[in-house]
Image (cartoon, rainbow, N blue to C red; front, top):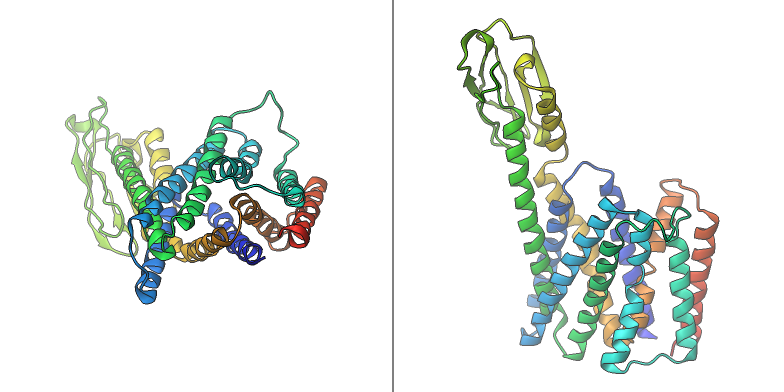
Length: 382
C-alpha cells in the first residue's frame, strides 16, 4: 500500500497548492505571471535535487516536456472555461481525469482493477462529483463545456505521461525539470504577451486628445522604470500641454501633468494605474473611456511581486509532483489519479474553517463518501 500513502500525501500537497491558488485568486494579479513563477520554482527545486542525487539524464526524461505541455494546456483550458462558462460544469469535468486515466491505462497497459478496487474507485469519484456539483447546472446550461472537457483530457494526459515515465524508467528529477521548464516557458511567453497588451492599452489610455480628436500625447513607463510624459496640442486654444517629470518612487513612477494652453483645460485629475504608478493628467484632455482603461488594465500587483508569490506556490507543486510520480511507480495509474484528486477536499476544509464558508448538504455527503472510498481502498486496494 505504498502507492496509497504517497497518493494521499500528494493530495495533501496539491490541496495546499489549491489553497494558495484560492488565496491568490482574490488578489489583483496576473494569473500567467503567477503560474510562470510556480513552474519556474519547480524547475529550480527539481534541478537542485537532480544535481544532488546525481540522477542520470536520459532520453526518457524528455517525457517531462510532454507533461509540461499537457499541464500548461490543461490550466489554460480550465481558466478559459471558468471565464466563459459555468464554473460548476467546468469544476465537475476537471474532477474526472482519473476516469479517463483508468480507461486509457487499461487499453494501453492492461491495468485491470479487481472488484473491490473498482468499487472503491467508483465511491471516490462519486464523492468528488458530489462535492463539485452545483444546483444551477442543467443540460440546457452547458456554457464552457468544451473547455472543461479539453481540460479534463489534458489533465488525464499529464497523469498518464507521469505513469509512462515510470514505465520507461526515466529518472524522476530530470523528468520533472523538463516538465517544469516547459510549463514555465509557456506561461512566461503568455505573460510577456499580456504585458505587451497592457502597455499598448496604457499608451492609449493616457494619450491627450485635442478638440478635433487628434492624438497628441505620449505614454507612461511600466514597472519601476518611470517615465516622463509630454504632448502638445496641434489645435491651439482648445488643447493642452502636459509635461511630465519622472519622480523616483517605489514601485512605479509619478508623472505630474500640467495644463499650459487652452481654455478647455480643467483641474488635474489622478488616475491610479498598476505597478504602483500614479499619473496626473488634465481631466478635460482625456475621455472617460480612457480613464476607465487606465484604471482597469493597470490595476493590481506588480509582475515582480506576482512572480515571487508564484515561486512560493511552486514549492507545494514540486513536492506534489515528486509524490505522485513515486505513487505512479508503485501503483495503478487510475487508482493513484483518483486518490490524488481528493485534494479538492483539502481546499474545501480550508474554505470551511478558515474562510468560514458553510458546507452544503451535498458537499457534506460528498466528503463522507470520498473518505469512505479511501477506507475501502485501504482495506481492499491491494
